[in-house]
Image: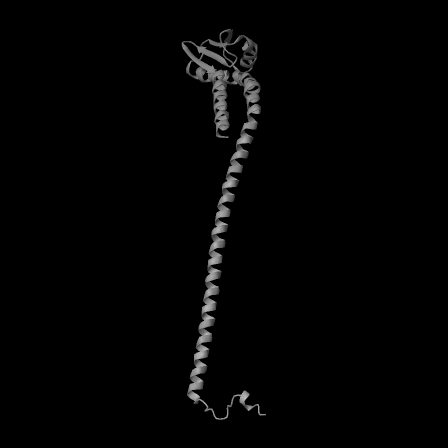
Length: 196
């Protein structure tokens, strides 16, 4: 029994011409090149798309982080500001009046010296509150060479005084300054509390 029927006979087949082999080979190379270029372009497009998505995601996260930091900063600043309120109230209520008492004499002497330049050799009258009378007398005694008189007036506040030389008069009102500072500070802390 012969098995030749099972195998193909290539002996009688014609060989294709060299041009056809070369043409088929070029066509196959072109197909391979096109497949490579298509795959490369698809990879490039995927990488570009992934980079753009990453860029958008990073930008969004960065923007959100900036917003979070801004909110956190504002929140911290507001809490810090409000925590200073008791300290500032103590300064205004306790320390500032003491500073005013200390500074009152210096302000009075400054006013007197300015007025003496305009009205030399006239009697000087300094009107202050009763608690400040002795302090102002001692300061004026050290600084003034002209004769002066210190008058205690119960209606004046501790930060108020009048300086009179002849018919000229000037007022020193540090109490109003303290009140204005106190009002401004209260307004500042009220606004800070409303913002938070």
